[in-house]
Image 1 (cartoon, rainbow, N blue to C red):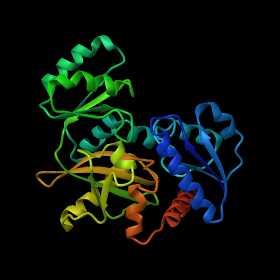
Image 2: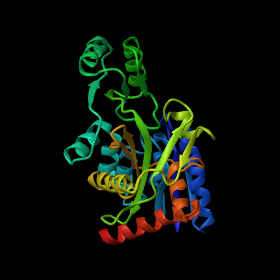
Image 3: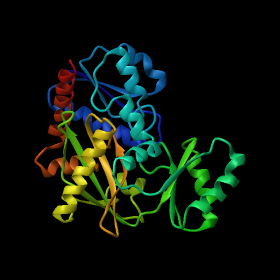
Image 4: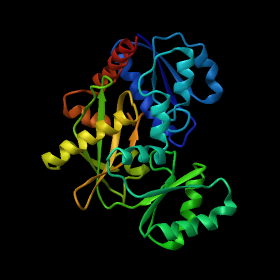
Length: 314
């Protein structure tokens, strides 16, 4: 097949996306596809408009890649692509909106509030509202950002303002939520629409205090335990909750769902990643390896699933 790979981008996750893109390009070439690589940015839309390919593989992360915008452009051009569509991408990227959907459908979420930070003169009021609504420690992060960029775990009231300022650099809306102490796990999901299945659960043991950017992407930054050492009942619940979350947002082909297992042994859903990292240290390929899928085979599987879903739509 002729497949274009969009990667790079302009978000704070550009470096990660460059690594993801290189991995995808190599895997597709190894499988015999003709690949057109595009280090994408909004000023390169002309390259996308001129594309003559069978499929686009989106290896972008963050804004203009994971938020539904590039998906909308490809839809208008009637070019099929791997992964979730406009609505699912936008909903998953908007943490506050997706948490509302999860909570309304019985999935456990941490208590949270969203605040508009477009006007710096309101920061004093926002800080007071946060103090009234939350008990230390709590998390402040951009509402639409990935890879824990702009995230702070606030343990002291004097740090609230700086956490607001840092999160506001990445987004016009910030999310404040209870800090849930527990074990960090993630569950990859993939499959034909309506028949998705969860892959082995992964436990993440970061070398730092929490699973931050360095823990995610620097070699040795975290340990991935696959399958996670959790009992059978909890494993089943995590997998069921992950598939439910994937389907609630109407995700397509694949996603990765992040959880914290709290001290009561309950899975608290954090977010759904519609374009999870596919770098050499990424989680999804680790889980796929456990069921006998090499990196190259995993990428090829995404292509096959995209074709199957396209045929179902027709």
